[in-house]
Image (cartoon, rainbow, N blue to C red; front, side, top):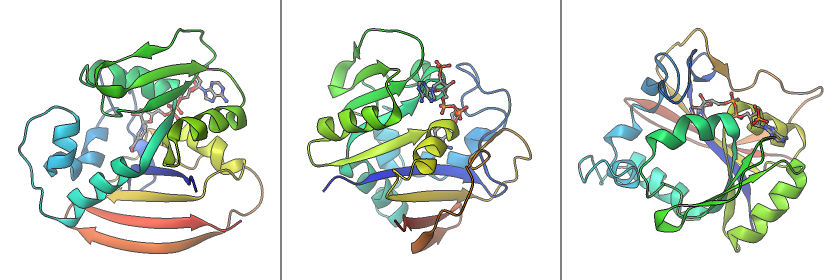
Length: 207
Ligand SMILES: NC(=O)c1ccc[n+]([C@@H]2O[C@H](COP(=O)([O-])OP(=O)(O)OC[C@H]3O[C@@H](n4cnc5c(N)ncnc54)[C@H](OP(=O)(O)O)[C@@H]3O)[C@@H](O)[C@H]2O)c1
């Protein structure tokens, strides 16, 4: 059965990006440090076409591979798309359909290597339905940013999530959980793992 999940890097004080982010400043001021652990992993470098360096024989690398392999479709906010797209290789690192939520109209955009970006202003429920169909029994990843992740969490549509906590205080920027709605969201810890550059925390949403 298709699971809906998100998987993001976050500073210890709760930010997924620093301030002043944009296409020329991906992840904002100081924000790339959140992903420092990923830039040491071969799976990540290969996905971004940054060569065959990095370490392939460690649990951090396995985690990146597992997350990529389980995903059959992605849902992404327009700000993440605008910021990421000029910095991703032409052979974009998704290799699956990506549904970009936006109020701007735009035709689908097919990239080399299996990624097609579909731009949609449908309800988040309808977008999830399309992504689930497109995922063909694999999982749907809500890629981010914070805005779209919170909408899916608030709507009770997220099944599980992983947060990679980086040893860094950003103090300012895009806060992951700034606009959660009223009431409690019950979650259950599923696992925790750490390496020198990051702590991985896995949760399941209790429904
Ligand atoms: N640390 C990590 O792992 C990680 C992961 C992902 C992203 N990020 C960072 O997060 C930042 C972006 O996050 P963000 O919270 O500012 O924005 P976001 O979620 O990426 O995008 C928000 C935009 O998506 C569109 N949108 C949202 N909900 C919609 C809906 N229901 N219907 C139609 N359109 C909708 C709107 O675009 P329009 O204005 O076009 O309508 C809105 O302005 C970036 O800096 C990115 O690098 C970090």
